[in-house]
Amino acid sequence: MGRFPLRGFLIAVGVIALVVFVATQSGARNHSNVVSYSTFQQQLENGQVRSIRIRNTQLQVTPKSGDAYVTYLPTPPSDLSPFTNRGVDVQALPPATNWGNVVVYAVPILLMVALLFYLLRGARGGGDGAVSFGKSRARLVTEENTNVLFRDVAGVEEAKNDLTEVVEFLKNPAKFHALGARIPHGVLMVGPPGSGKTHLAKAVAGEAKVPFFSISGSDFVEMFVGVGAARVRDLFETAKKNAPCIVFIDEIDAVGRRRGLSVNGGNDEREQTLNALLVEMDGFETQHDIIIMAATNRPDVLDPALLRPGRFDRQVVVDAPDVRGREMILGIHARGKPLSSTVDLHRVAVRTPGFVGADLENLLNEAALVAARNDRREITMVDIDEAADRVVMGPERRSRVINDREKRVTAFHEAGHALAADLLEHADPVHKITIVPRGRALGYVMQFPEEDRMSASRNMLLDRVAVALAGRATEQLVFDDVTTGAQNDFEQATQIARRMVTRWGMSPTVGHVALSSSADSYLGEVEGARSYSEETARLVDIEVKAIVEEQYARISDLITAHRDELQRVVDVLLERETLHADEFAMLLRGEELPPEPPPLSTEAPRSKGPAAAGKGSADAPQEPRLPPGMLPKPG
Image 1 (cartoon, helix red, strand yellow):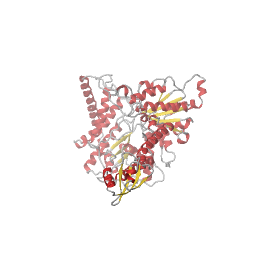
Image 2 (tube, rainbow, N blue to C red):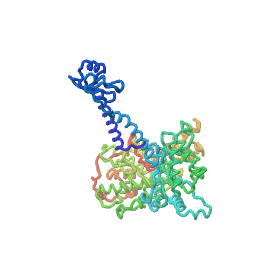
Image 3 (cartoon, one colour):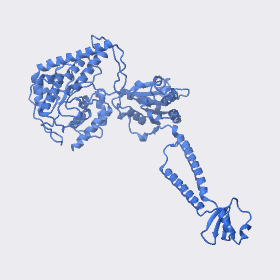
Image 4 (cartoon, helix red, strand yellow):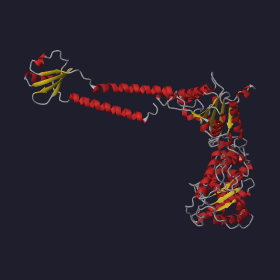
């Protein structure tokens, strides 16, 4: 029935308690000291009655001895002579109202009337009553409720241009009507989580200067069939009264999923809600001065009828920004934050491939927290680097204690990755090497491409496989033994090799065929059903293994030929625990590193003993938690 006010609930409880109390007291009075009429008649005949008070059928008898009592007649007496002839003082009293009975019978009726009035008031005013169960939950966004404009949006220029056209149509429709143009009835924004779809909708609300209704797709869905459809109809009725206007439906995949897949058949509540939405968007009474905007990160599950022209005419892709877009986004989120003169936002943008707007906002917020933790008045580049490591890998875990041998194994493992990345032509350059544990990683090598890439060549993929296997190859070469720390490296190498064979047609033996596919989703790839024979599957396994073993042998020979450079990197890594790109390059050139500068933070100095951590184990993979869009990097 909706949210019942607490005050009304307490009043109802009090009234019920009063009714029970009155009824109890009334019953107690009516049934105390009651004797039978035969006993009264016997006392009357024996002359033991002094007086009688008659009220309707009730006789209040006062005997000559003993306590007064009450008895009842079947009907009100019409003749009092049987009492007066025996010398009894008789008095007829006027009829009295039994207020206990009145309360018992009247209060439930009053409560029902009050309940009916409450429901009717909710129906008239669109309140929270039971009749408003099918009312739309859309919130009207006014200019005062949002301060986001298009100047506060960056990195998605094409999407912003499409939406700017929508806003311009609402402000000046005659310009488009003069050319016979019709503005898109529906605009669907698709992209990965955190890419700025809802932020763009807020900017449209701030720029449009027209009523803007915002609602989530889950607000339509209820357990009762027909409620969602009623809410859709009510939403569009409200929008028609405020036209021209914009209706924004966030996470539309909650209600717009493909029909026919439900186990409940055609009466499924979600399908009925979708049917109502389809009719309202493009039915017999369609109004094109109501623009529907929607956002989703699951365009692959939407119903085809929802995506056809006339409903969602235009799809706006809000994808992860490139390096220039990331720099612009960082500039927007840096407003109001005191940045040091050493901060280079372009450098930050280069080292954050795959980051979306939410990731970049979180990065600068983490940097501000690091600076505040170290009692600094400005955010320095050191704070941003530390924040980037925290976002990608997690916080440092210097409290973990390992022995010296495991520390050496870790240093050789990570140095092997770094050396392989430097020696291979198509590998991404090394940004950082560390044996300080972060999150679940006990050591890692961080690599970033020099520029954003939209595709990868076969040589690049083979070099990535080789770099992933370099840690294990180095362990076997130096210690003539292996550890469990390469588990995640093997997973990466095998995954890349299998995709080369089954998806990208990069195996001469299998041929130029795609043996597997994945759903077009921004929430991660979902492998489709296998559509090839067992013989082909066996051939795929043989090819994947051949690629991995070939690259393992290749990188083993390469590291053996550069054993001196490997040892040089390991010696300094054991001393300093972390090497940056310029220091790593100096070591490979055979140059001496300058003395390590004192730390800028107020944290404790880096430990030189066994408190430093090594490489990962079987249950603690070393691979960092990369943001969406980044290809895995070994470490």
